[in-house]
Image 1 (spheres, one colour):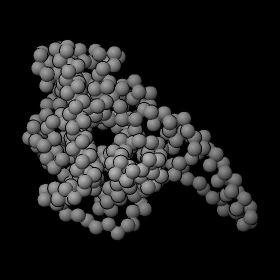
Image 2 (cartoon, one colour):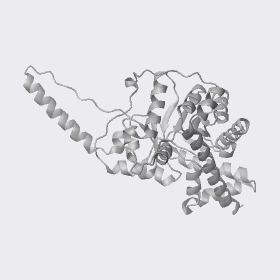
Image 3 (tube, helix red, strand yellow):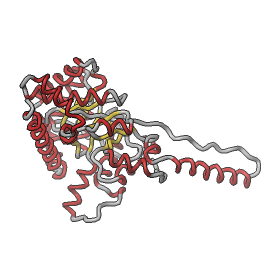
Image 4 (cartoon, one colour):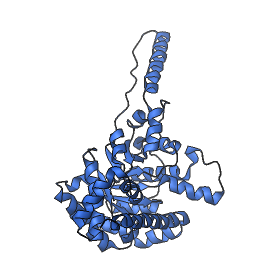
Length: 354
């Protein structure tokens, strides 16, 4: 499955004039602030957010990616399945079927790469291609599949530097990513992140990027606590989880990129303004484009002063902490099952053409 991602800039600063008269200085500053605010308010929220955070398009719809021109783009098996059933992309399916010569696994790999190739023609950054979720507990098979995907991209003259191999953040998946990163120079996007322990294990494995799932975390707590009206953005459990991961990474100097994913509303997106990257669906990208309300940067590396304790990570610690986190355990398993379901559905679409 393919995945792509998009990116940032910096906000202008207000310069104060040096005036001898205190009242004149105050008046000038007030006027300048007003003008600055007016200028900012003319920017869409998309444009404002793009100055604070790398924006990534979360879709397999190539035309939607083209519309917003992100730096990168992300997809998953569910998004690829949806896109592959659209008439506009039937040629990509047919090409993969022809290439596979009756071998379903080859057809599926080629289909993912076909979508990825098209996306690389639009975005300048990464394309994330996802390994079959059914390999989530098999380190060696995950490595083999990743190398196969990279080889298929190479056959299309797309270098591995453009690709993120997307892997579920099980212990086995994280170990596969560690080998891919450190022995093969292949960048990885560890997905289905629901806990700090997963995030720490990924950082210790030197993974390029992680995708913590904001909305799915919120879903779990909303159901457990019987919340009907949702949460205020600052109280959203998913937002809090990503914020904590971001602060931990910055506190201890990890280079792994934090990319918030799986949003349920624009409020969650804006509450994470300043996160390394945010992968956002076309629906919310449009909402951000339509609004000019001023937004505030919530996460900044310079503000990380909290007393955070470093966790020594190993397999036993990972498995124990996951065991103690019912939400993370349930949502990781559920995510793998759902991605598998959509892979099987896509295989049925492909099989009808083989």
